[in-house]
Each structure stands twice: as structure tokens, then as C-alpha cells.
Image (tube, rainbow, N blue to C red):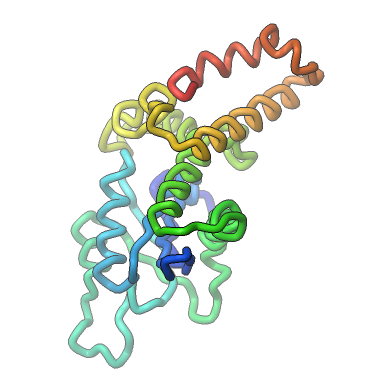
Length: 246
């Protein structure tokens, strides 16, 4: 992918199911920071897609300059919609100075980043667990996305989490931001572990351990037995970073 400054989002819609029925999953991922944002809705029409974009704009502390979507009717008018030449999704883009780009027709892989995120989310939720209700899935999905954004260290970000990358970008390019990410976004200093579900806490702890292992490999530090964890400097560092999570 061509490098872009922070604020280029890929957006897509997928279908998921619980015992209670089908839902539509709206997913957005920043091409540069890899920050993910999701919403579960009963149906995904033009109004839901436009509201999702509004929620995304509100959620991130920096300016979104570009969004990439497919040619679905939620994002662009059909040829027969002669009275809808200015769809609501584009109107939201125009209101916020966002360029709306479309993938090439019959070339869905041009939106591959968000397609991969869709698969990752499904593999961690509906393909692994059974949900009796939409609310069960919604809670678990929120937990997973929080663990990903604030706990998963990514090779493409040189070992940073999406949240850490955003904070680093805030220091380097504050003019791209609308708010201090330390204040607006729930992170290590603001997210309360008591508000996480049991599965969410387990997800966070798992991502934290993945991060510890990544850092130790990068530093060439040999693995230690579990009994020596308390003496491990990386254990102490992670304990300090993750006090809000337990």
C-alpha cells in the first residue's frame, strides 16, 4: 500500500449471527494506525452507514481525510437511483472534508485491509463461540476490539499497539489531531478493568502476554520459568503499564 498520513479509513460491512438472528457488522480500520472501530446493527442501509461514519469521526481524536468503501448501495447511488445523486454517506463526507474513494468494481481485494479485519473479528467471535443473544455478541465484540486496539502489538507498527501509534503520531504531527488522544480515547490510564467482562479481561491479559513476549524476543532476553515472573523487569513494566486493567 502507498503510505498515507494517519486518517485514511477502510470501511466494510459483514454479516454475523447469534441464536437470536442475523446482524450486520460495520467495520472501519485506519490504513496507517491500524485502529479499528466497529458497530453491530440490525440492518445496514444508507442511514446506518452514514451514522457509522459520524460515530467514527466522533470516536477518533484526529481528522479523517479519506475513506475507502466498496460500491455497495449503502455508500454510493445505483444507476437507477436518478433522484439520489447525492447519497447521505457522501454528504457526511462533504460536511467533514473527507474524500470518499471507491474500490474498483469486481476488485474487492483493493479493500483487503478491512476484509482481513472482518475475518479476524469473526475468527475470534462467531466462528469460535455460540451466542444466545445479540447483547452477548456485542459485549464480547467490544472486549475484543478494545484488546486489539490497546493490547495487540503489530509488526507493521514496529511493535506498537494501534493506540500507542496514535499517541506517537500526536507527538510528531499534532496538527492532524482534533483532541489529545490521551484524554479522548480509553487507554491504559483510563480503562477500568472492573468494566470489562470476564472474557474481555482474559483477552486483554492474553494480548499483554503477547506483547511481553514480542518485546523480550526483540531484546534477545531468554524465556524465564513462570516462578521467576515477579523478578522479570518486563513483568514489572507491564504491571506498571496495565494497572488500570488489573
